[in-house]
Image (cartoon, rainbow, N blue to C red; front, side):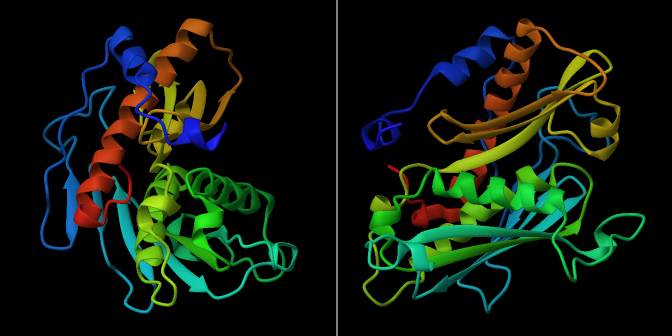
Length: 283
């Protein structure tokens, strides 16, 4: 899409889909302790509804040596997102007056059971796919020309995995990226020009015949359909990855899945906005 479209007003189609599918309107996100922002969508005493996110928390900043950092908690899943700035660009971008944003994704050995071996020699295919997804999602909302000739790498390290690690990585990576851009002191770019929009992601699936938002590992394993949806804060789609697991799904079910994911990313955007506070870069 052109820059004008990307910078346009909110696309209401996503929320209209959610309402048409019978999902409730997004609620507000309460603030947690200092430096931490929480969205408690369910509790042990209150079973999670089909359109509810898992309990969410963003801790920012988290790592003092990184230009931007956040620990995102999504249920039992924990991902540390750190962003680092370098005063150069890949060789193929040199002299073009543009910057670059990329991402790396890694699961720590103890983040899963059984233990996941470290990627010592070669990054496996799943890891490559996920880090490319994170990088694409971030670049979709960044004006690389406004960034200037510098590179930002966002590292997403999974501390504990219980489903939704790639989507949590995208949601947390955006917050870390904003702080990294804010940290630039030499010829600093204008924040509102660098970011065309915000970006967040969530998983959704069909479990036991019903649409469920924000799948944990057990739900993901049992899902007949599994989908990851990346959206901007204005309700525009960046990427949709959906597959049937030895099953098929109808156009009506696809609409329900998209509607649930749209509602989920709206809530995640609220959480990001609360976490960044005055640093929120999007108009």
